[in-house]
Image 1 (cartoon, rainbow, N blue to C red):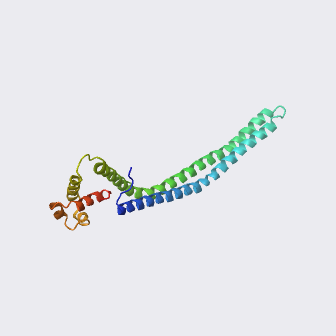
Image 2: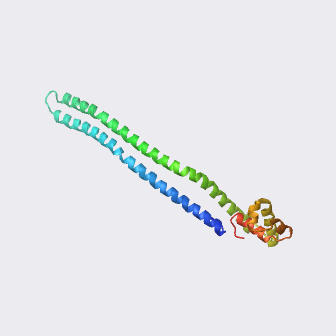
Image 3: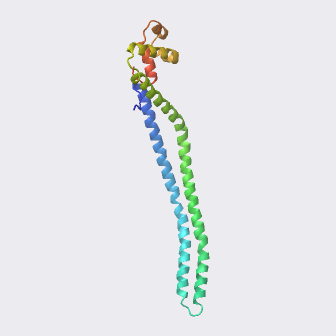
Length: 204
């Protein structure tokens, strides 16, 4: 399985892009996680309010149990006490729970927003380019290096030179030979074949 081109310059570009991308992703993943952790820490305020409400209700239960031993009116007093303290503590429990959920939701949304703003533009350019390069490299390696059976090397070189002449731009051709048309017309296929191979990441 090939992951990088055989051509040193192309391989260097791919490695730099890969390292830069994973460094960028790792950096902002850490930033987003720390942002979430920091903001989520404020949810403790909501939990504290909720615990306060629960403590009020618990105190009501304890007071009610203490008063429940009174003769004649003990049971009524216990019920009234528990009801009063329960009603007093319920708003704190509700507000604390809602505040905790709200702060956690805000923390998560901001974390996702940071990741989206920083990573989507980068990855939308890197991923298609890297996938295309990888696909070209692997399919070319299979078609050129592995698939041919009992095909003379000269015939393969001729076909590669023809493909280069018809597919590459003049600028790309001139990087490999000063006379691409003359080379092909006179049967000098080596430089054109090398141009085609290097265009898909294979060493010529």
